[in-house]
Image (cartoon, rainbow, N blue to C red):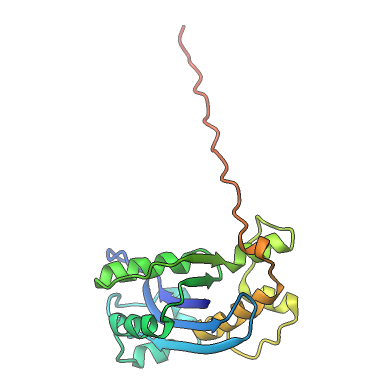
Length: 192
């Protein structure tokens, strides 16, 4: 299983791309299992000329700026590192979509996951708050996991996410909230 995280620069201009700046991942044998190996790649930003406020706060932004690695090169190395693993976990729903967006933009093949787990949603379900999506740093603090690494570094966030997996049951991982149907407002007729 691959537990991964991304850091990116959100699109602010006419180029519709949340540009990935870092890919971080860890391999575990099962959810919550020990970390078996790690992957980290900083990617040189090439699309947007400025950084959004969130990207400017990344603790390792200068590692991406100084990198000579292009997205396609980093993605190929990541795919090679993944091998045949096709079960992925993320903290939240956004990273998987950002991967697909970047792969399409750069013309490289995305991966075909067998299963994708959202550990943020699973944690919320496990602790009885399925509508609450807590920040990773809050959950790490809540669980008493020592916060020895900076948050918002993709590799370190992947490590923290993998550690949170030890508190999740399979039923939490498989939890899918029911989609709520929006009620249509009835228009009032003002006919006379």
